[in-house]
Length: 289
Image 1: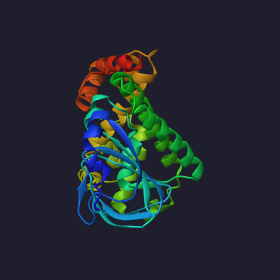
Image 2: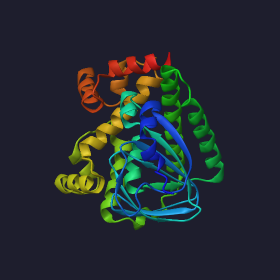
Image 3: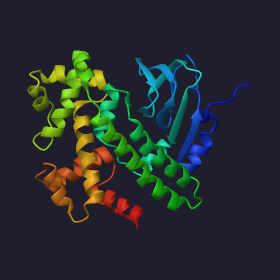
């Protein structure tokens, strides 16, 4: 008997609960056909393997591998083993935006180059513990309490996975096509020089490339413009400071991020986040009370 995939069959539950954990999932929604998730999905492979194409790139997903499927990205499942067993954490994309979840830009950027990554058994035990907590929280009936706890726990999980990913050796970097090496070097340069410059030409010069070629290469490789990557990184750091450093004024945060004028920082933040830094801090503060 055909059993619908939980990401399809339980779409209404995801909408109502905002985050739902599905254990022991043994397949994909559409074998051989493109599947585009409307939600953000964290996938943790417990055993077995899956072969698929992710945004037209071949990937193999095996035991102790982790991937994050961002909304509107296409997956074409090819085949999977009979013992394939994966845990899925489905996060309502609409809710994630409303809650202003903070995702490390490094994780998003590296995910484009490396769709999945491997974790150790010890790391898996930590992840499983956090997933169990998220699953338990998602059953709380009080929506406000549930949302506050889920937001914090989900951000903790994403940051933990980001830490695990950053510690993974990038020995395969030299085997990447030159365009992807340019993109990866670009991210490293953002981390180093974001306070110094937000201009495309500055980062192109770091790799002895013309601004036009550099900008085209980054966009064709990642699907995101150079200026947007820089903005994502800066605004992500700003959000973390606005949430975790209440002792700092917004002016101090602006200066720490390379902005001489508070008004410039405010406009820059609002273009990316949709709200002002002060409004974001107010919302984040209300969520932790």
